[in-house]
Image (cartoon, rainbow, N blue to C red; front, side, top):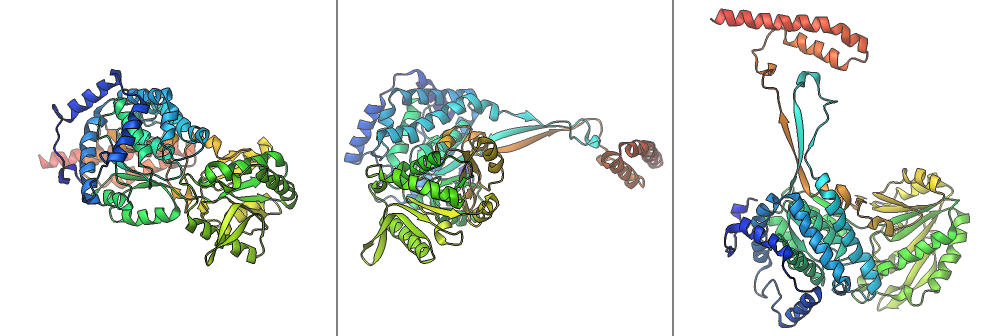
Length: 556
């Protein structure tokens, strides 16, 4: 959808959009209010209602239309700014956050401050610094290698230019409301895009605070626009015409958004649900494996798409790991009973998980840890659920379980482990435990977008690591160089020879002979045979030239 077809609010900025960008960039050197002061302002606005971006009677589509038009205008000027100027603003943003990281962490609805700093703020800052160091090189125009250029296109050069997409829509999740959408937003603006952000329910404050910080650091107002939390806002943005969608959410959400995107063929990157696998080789350290499993099951109340859900191990390794795992879970006071950041896992989630556990038990699995208790006419999960003797055909080993549930699938060897793993349609990430050499070799055989060795979850916070799902876990990449390039569209600029364009010449009877000889010359399996073709090719070309000269003389 073209910008001109969108309804635009009045532009009150004197000097137009470019003047607005220049004035905003100049803010980098101005005194800025502290993050704590801005949080106090947000708290006041929340109380008085003055901070709302949408009046109670204003339709969601009208709000989205206005914000999209504003983002279109802002992006035109923002993309003209040099990459170094854009990155200087990100540097100022990172330094501002680093002055008072606790205040930014405070806007995330999570009880554990240390966990918020580690899981939300630190990775966000690391991703920002990655862009400062690497984005200019990743986004620079490059020349295609001449090595594979066809001989008949001698003199042609190809320049490859990554260009901004325009306006991208970022649909954020609730489990990491700052870090996950925040990194995508930073990558989008670094690449020269403007962004519409649709936060998850009750997650607006985290993103709004980040936007305020970015604008205080010099980002022009309008480059990042925050939408209402209602799902209708994302649907309206897609319908009105964004240039690409970045969704982090469940597989169900991905299917729904894909249906909406199909009508306009809008491209998307989707990081969706996981049912992540842990492969335990026979030379793994059971203590390390059990420690990592406890961490993965309890980090962020197990509301992490990369949390371990399936363990593939032999009988010997399983029998060594399970007692350690249960002992360590029991040694963590109340760890198994902590709820998600909202204060408790949704009842429908607990009931869904309980249903899957009950099905597995009826099919022969054993519940070794955690319990199912009656809740009305249904069962609910309580604590961390550890199941043994699960098989790959059970629904619990093939489902998106956003709760602390871990299934052990006993296998005879590595080959069976890979075969059983392939039965799950959710393919996000995986981990392998064992000796470094064997683990490296085995990791290459695992069907997953990201594989960690002798650890899980945390190493993927490295900003160099691109992340993406396969199968029902999504498509495309976020983070790292690959994620940054997802925020661009590639343009090829082809320069040709000024003096030799045989395709513009009159056809001749010798054309087929010339082309046949050329194919032999370029693609023969034998270099000697190619050389033998040269005399015949020369004769055919000379015949072409003679025919054209004769034709030209006849015309005159």
